[in-house]
Amino acid sequence: MTRYLLTLATTLVLGAASPAWAADPIKIGAILSATGPASFLGEPERNTLHMLQDQINEQGGLLGRPLEVIIYDDETEVNKAVSAANRLLSRDRVVAAIGATTSGNTLAVMPRFSSARIPLVSMAAAERIVKPINPWVFKTPQSDRHAVIKILEHAKSEELSNIAILTVSDGFGQAGREVLQELLPAYGMNLVADEIYGPRDTDMTPQLTKIRGLNPDAIIVWGTNPGPAVIARNRVQLGMQTPMYMSHGVASKRFIELAGEAAEGLILPAGRLAVADQLPEDHPQKALLLEYIQAYEARFNAEVSTFGGYAYDALMLIVEAVNRAGEATPQAIRDKLEQVSGFVGTGGIFEMSPEDHNGLDERAFVMVRITDGDWELLVE
Image 1 (tube, rainbow, N blue to C red):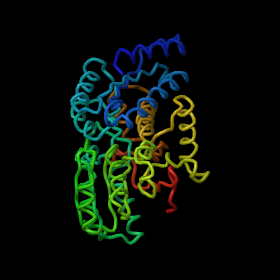
Image 2: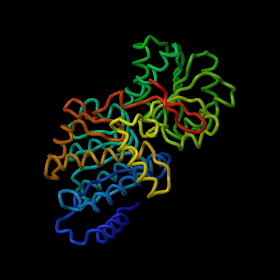
Image 3: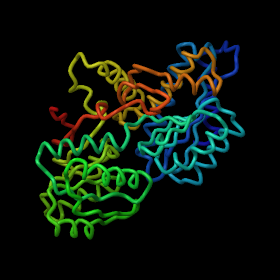
Image 4: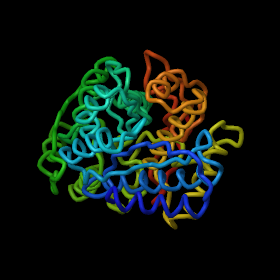
């Protein structure tokens, strides 16, 4: 969506719901991959931001001012993400920003926001986004390290020790590969194959054939759609029975649709949004998750996604920071983001600090298995 169209839509919404706004809007920017290869991530993010903006304005806005979320679509291209960052900073003059959708695009735009001293809350998972700490950069998804730990703990419980990894060559895959290479020996496991594929590759049978020849106990695939779905289908086509783990990068129903029956039995770490109805009634996230799911699915007639949850957490963390600060200056938002504690989000319960700009650990993940085309929560 272009800047003009969103502003027009926003004006119409604000004019209909709150005709008596006496103050200028609080502008928060967003850079999303609403189209292109990562659109299955960016579309629920965009929907969620639109929904939250309307809900907040219908309830009186933010500090009594209307909230305006200015969204740019980077089409999953890094150069367009950088251009969008420049527009948000120089033309729109936002007080905070959300994005980007992917790790690679986030890493590309981070320096611009930190140089401008505007807080950025990413919706991408790479650990490198928040390590080392950049005072102006935060993120909402659980980190690669947390996902790797959950996978390796599960593999250890199954007495699987010889592990093959198959990772995508983009920023998300590179970050996951680095953590896997680091933590496999720490868990007493052997890395018996280390294969890579390209984000636009359509056939990974050569890598899987090589892996099969090394007879691993399990395969860990690290990527986002469509590559992992291709790998799942290739595995079935080759008749492989080797257990396969996926990363949290495919924790959406879109992956199951793409992989079809080949997804059955695959195991991955996922946020609790995917299995909200299976959580105990007294779990602190359950009420929030069910409320978000109901509102999203009623408005968009589409199933909620973990990735929309990342956008939910990003915007609501900024809203929380503005409310705690009592003002909407970039410095105040940054300072209060760093102090958020006990904030219940879709991805977990956030505990930010000057040393931790993610605020989550591996406890924010649960392990799920794909069973009968749906997520099955595994008992921990």
